[in-house]
Image 1 (cartoon, each protein chain N blue to C red):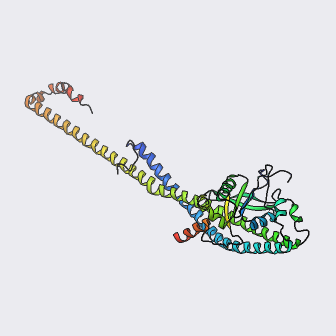
Image 2: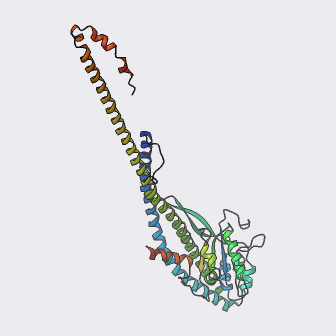
Length: 122
Length: 249
């Protein structure tokens, strides 16, 4: 593990876009990663964070090739819903997770919505 | 009909080629149909699993959030310690590929590398146990989320694959096959037409020949009735009609 992040072969990372509590929890579990250029794989969103910043981070995480899964709080995903809905690539996978203040609403999830359509469609 | 066929020269060779292509198209259609069915079966399994896992994720995340609150209560504000001690990720995902009917589906599995790192020291002063419990709860969530991500990726990949396969199946069935069939019937029609023409032409030639010979017979009869009696001029007469051989087919 002396090698720094982003090395192919030692697995890919998870990225997190979430509120402070969610990010703290996942960092505690050991998901966090800071590379040599001090680039992190997590973004803490609070009321001061602009939507632009979230969009940029989302774009960055989905385009980094060392990230396999992007976790994003559902209420934050709602802020950039158009981007999440237009995201079609299978890797990295976007996962919408509930946050502490916002309970999980399956009807808003981009993927689940598609699943529902499939079930209803045929 | 004339638009819905290939532009070909109607010959026997092309007919054979078209027939071979039709056989190929039918076979390909059957195979693709099978592939689409196999993918759909897998797709249905995944759909069910996704819905189940998403529901249970809600529960797990709630537990994690609660554990975090507990830890906060016991250990105070340890957020900054956590943020500061981030180095390299201990939890990573390894992508493997699963093969379903020739479609590669990425499959994630999470791996733990290294020890607990600096995170193990969080909450050393107080509330360490709660912090560790919180850590465990979030690890469990990560596990579940990775599984869910795996399913979701499979879902997207399969969805795409099924769409393309179905498109191909339908294209073969509704475009390529009728086109080939039309071409084949067109070539057959043309060939029949040619045959009829040929037959008609042969009949014409025969009729002309018959008419000519009848005319000659009549001529011979008219002037050579006595000549046939001695028999000598007859062969001379035969050699004297070379124009008969000039008929060109």
